[in-house]
Image 1 (cartoon, rainbow, N blue to C red):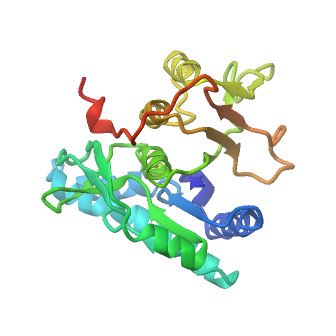
Image 2: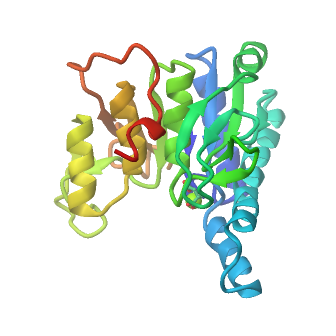
Amino acid sequence: MKFGGAALSTLELIKEAAIKIKKKLKSYDEIIIVASAMGSMTDDLLELAKKMNPNPPKREQDMLLTAGERISMSLLSIALDQLGINGVSLTGSQSGIITTDDHSNAYIIDVRPIRIPNLLKENGVVVVAGFQGVSEKKEITTLGRGGSDTTAIALGVALNAEKVEFYKDVEGFYTDDPKIDSLATLIEHLNYDEALELIKLSGRYVVHPRAIELAKKNGIPVHILPYQKESLAKKGKGSWIIDSAFRPPSRAVYEKEFAFS
Ligand code: ASP
Ligand code: MG
């Protein structure tokens, strides 16, 4: 389950996310949560850096920005604790997200989530900070804006998840912009290429295209859902990105293997 910045923008919404996770645990034994920074926190942190220095060193900027996801992941774990769930939070580095050393725009080379399987077995839930990783030189990196979607797919792939669910501020993929065109209809099923094409044509990053590209390479099913209460959502069904004809690769494929080709 991946919660975007909008879905975690207030303490109240973080509590609601924790309740959703608790409900989900009725039908799943093990759930990995990926958290994005609260609301506009990443922009706010970036602004702070730029006020200090119009050209902040990229290494330090990454250090600063990764704090955003640390705040949301730990608050979500704290909310889960109140519901009787021990969902340990982990940074990208602690989760084994290994990246290139391109600060502010790193690509995932490998995922070595050594601690996660045991934590899942013990507690059922692990909460991971999206958007961040660690280079082979042990430097903290970020994956570029919107990168927590990519974290969610990468972890899903590494841990053989049945699917990755995205809790977004939109219901899913639409034929047109639902905020502008009331006739826009929800697309309940699409394949990876259709999703990528729709993002390119519309410019609406329902899920970051890098994440969809990674999902496509590994054939992992993606389900986009609105985070709002059912009554606010139009249908609550969301969109599935899936390709039934797809034959999965024999091993996980990460970004380094195709991002630079
Ligand atoms: N918090 C980061 C950003 O705003 C990553 C993400 O939201 O996916 O870009
Ligand atoms: Mg964000």
